Image 1: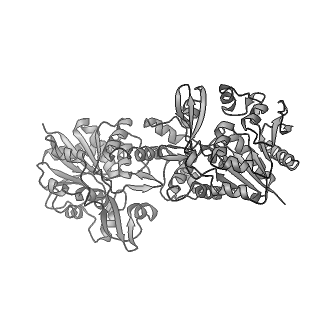
Image 2: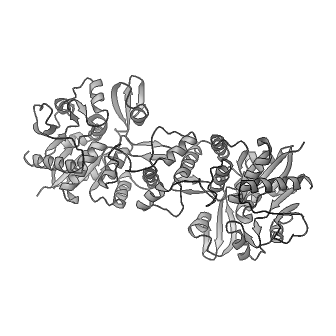
Image 3: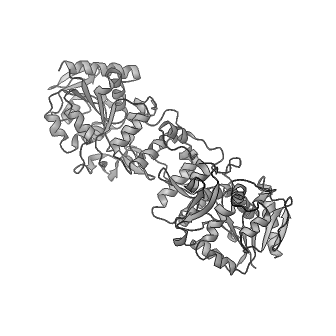
Length: 307
Length: 307
């Protein structure tokens, strides 16, 4: 029986739905492909924000209020960094830095996939968490203030510069990771779920890896996106602002159009108008807690079986 | 008038006397030359324990109880590192890691001397804190359990393996730092003080740098050592154990012999027998607090003027 599910994920929204899917599926039956185009080098550390958010969420270590980092983490290192006049615009929690230190050290002899598997193992995560690529891809944001590295735009400037476009440095020479390709070729594959992550920043890099769109178009299983929009707003992050600045409607129709015919179906909030041209499940898409995450994941999986 | 003092320092004892000297001298009149042979690479960080202890002490940030690290520092990063099964035998305080991160990052484009000057500046330290060398020197300890990297011997194995000898990897090709050479050539130089640091681990590397012993033998100013021993024990650290294991007496005579005719004078504790062949000041050498540090420094400086 076909039972394997691939989830394409960015940060918070992807992590939350992945956590829900992990509650509904056996560990062997879920592969979460995580965006790495937000990754960056800072203070000598390789920081992978989306991988960390997914890992911490799956390990129930995540901070549900701020959406990133470790719950209850302290900022004593940051305070000392400020005292030393170091770059303190990107907040590093004390526990969080342990992850960055270990990852950076291990990357000297291993791929990001290997390092991620090892870190997940230490945190007791049994499902496969797979970076989209083992090569470096780095989002650059074209804005009215010029071209900005992603974290400069996202964190330091709080997404304030008006967007003109997004590019992914290194994408042409990057390859989908072996774990990603393997999951796409898994004979047990039953469905691919696009998590309610930022379409342009989190999902687009995954889709833009050489060969991925072609493989997805040639799929024999349903591809379902869960909309990150509710009532013309993104649940979290700048997706709605970015859509607006590029002249795209912040609606489920806008989302379906954005994916250019790739989707079979979309899961939208009851508050929203259903789009045309794809199958639609309208439900409560806001994930307030782990019960919501499991409930939405179950509904998505049941919907997939009808497709 | 000759007024400049060079202090040769390792960790705690060197930091304490340096703090005292800094209370007695104008900022321009003190250069602290710090051992770097204890430095090591760990989790991708370049860690300089003696430089840190001296810096934190001079900035009044030091932990007076444990003797290293920042007072009141937390260990949340360490706890997370343990959770991830990382190497946790070397304790890294959260605030302390900010120093290691910044130094490691800055070393990519600057010398250790430059980085140290910058860090000291941020901490408001006005005296010159100078690494003995800008090249890497790494202490190796020959023991009955074989050759060990210094921190492996010192921290991980708590100095338990019986000592057979000490070598300084890289010392032949290292050079004294420009700041060290400059201080030795300073026309205002009035005295050189060997702090009560571990003679074999902290002072010996400084003396072993190419040309340093020759320059010290050719000096025209008094060279005074403050004994790290009181009543057959070291105030802190393994100096007494190491002396014993190499068959050297743990006395001020043993100390004078160890320095092989280099000293003009020695400052010993009243509890100890005075050695022969050098001038002696017997006083209370235990530095319990900053008042003790300033008092001992003042006595050492007054003693130097009589030589």
